[in-house]
Image (cartoon, rainbow, N blue to C red):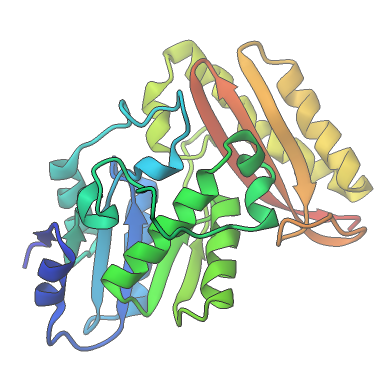
Length: 285
């Protein structure tokens, strides 16, 4: 049976009434690609044949700052539904902002929102003030609308994954948050809906971002600072890549350990497109 498309919480409740088994959700902003397909497949595995997989498609206005690409962010619901269906989704929830927030532009003056805390103000949060307030608020709303047992997120947005896990644990939401490794292009560039904004020369330059993370991984044997410096050195040699940050932190975004598992995270602008990526590294092995 093809995936059913609904646009309201009430219609979703009707569509899921009487369904047995676990319920898994994959939250997207649409413009689905092979990375999203992997998330839906993982959700299907966790839900099982008897469970339900819900894919949400919602371009969330409250996580975009002034001058960011909300208005031009790609919207392709028909192809998104087809891809979600082929990957194993049962239902696609595609609400508008009024359904999610009660207002067409997102937050109202009297809206209750989620404070992401300290971790929401570093890295992406420092570069994009208010971003994670919007992210966590909409994730909480979509959890409330979909009532999942499992929520599946990609590791490409690693800071988001850490914050969603923290939120669901701290607020005792009863949701198991599953992270899925980043799906990449043949040259290593992380799949992203924003890649389509890159010109051909910009696309070539952007391939330096995963190479920088590889360099950081190799250099991590000499410590976190050596790893970060090695990654930055790769990007410094590439014209057209404007580095925001490349840092090495512990898996929970705290200070990197002297030895052991850590995470290298990078954000850079290539042309007018902001790209992020990350990679697990081992310090001092």
